[in-house]
Image (cartoon, rainbow, N blue to C red; front, side, top):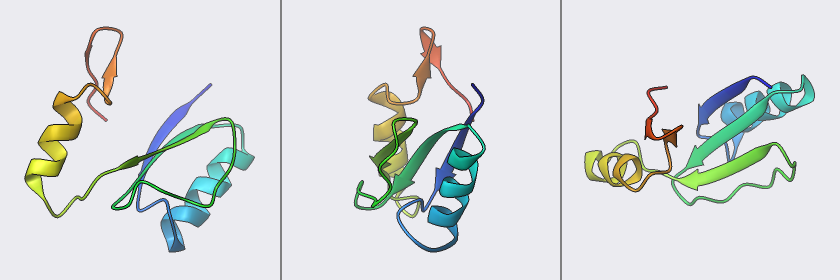
Amino acid sequence: MKKILITGASRGIGKATAQKFLGEGWSVIGTSRSGTASIHHPAFKIYALNLLDSRSIEKKVDSGYFWHRGRKRSW
């Protein structure tokens, strides 16, 4: 299954984009400042991430959310 990371996935264009990819069979990793979204799909995961705050980004990466097969994942 193909995977995609979509920022701003809780509303607007980000939400519509996430729904489009889910409809096409993709696994979607979404981010939003709140970490919540009204999308309910088994292939969708949402994480809190504030892209305007570099510390928020560093903490999320260091916490292991974006690790894959034992190493940091670069999206």
